[in-house]
Each structure stands twice: as structure tokens, then as C-alpha cells.
Image 1: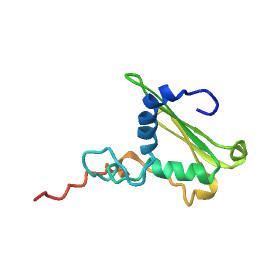
Image 2: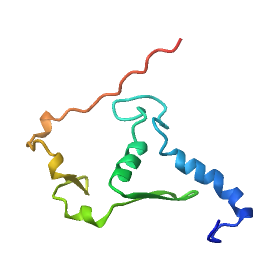
Image 3: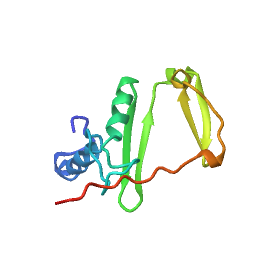
Length: 124
């Protein structure tokens, strides 16, 4: 508001949205209906946010009703000189810092097993 980008009158509309977007980064928050091996444990964007803070990076959220939400992660250019292991999964390229890689092995499809859902404890 101090820069004149958001007036006091319009801020009442944006503040609830900003509060909601910032809640995505709350510790141990989850939108999953049940806990599984892969989701619902509350480890997610709070971890992303803390890692970005350590690396002096930022995250920007752009959302539009009916169209979706974009999370834009920005890292300092100095991180571009870090050696990384690049690999592709389903037409997406990923990078892991090479100093975090302990071992690289080859496997065949018959050795890959799907992780099953954990059963939720019965409710009383």
C-alpha cells in the first residue's frame, strides 16, 4: 500500500486471499483426505519455503479462479554453477545437487514396486 499499488479500499478484497496463499506454507498443513505413504503427512510447501529461504531464493504464487495456480521458484544465479545430476521422468527434467547423490544404480521394471496406501486407523 505504501507504494500506491494497493489502495486501502481494495486491500480488503486481497488480504483474505493473501492470508490463504501464505497458509500453504504453514508447518504440517495438508489438504489430503487421508494419510498415505505419499501424501497427507503435512510435509510439503513448508519444507520448500524453508529450503528456498536457506538458499536465498523466493517463491511467488499466481492464482486465477477457474484457471489454476502457478508456483514460481526463483533461486540465485550462483546456484547455476553447482554440479548436478540431471534425469528425466515422464518428459520432465529434474536436477539433484551432485554432492547429495550417494549412489546411482540401474534397475529393471520387474524390480520396481508400487507403494501401497497406508490404512487409516479406525475411528471410534
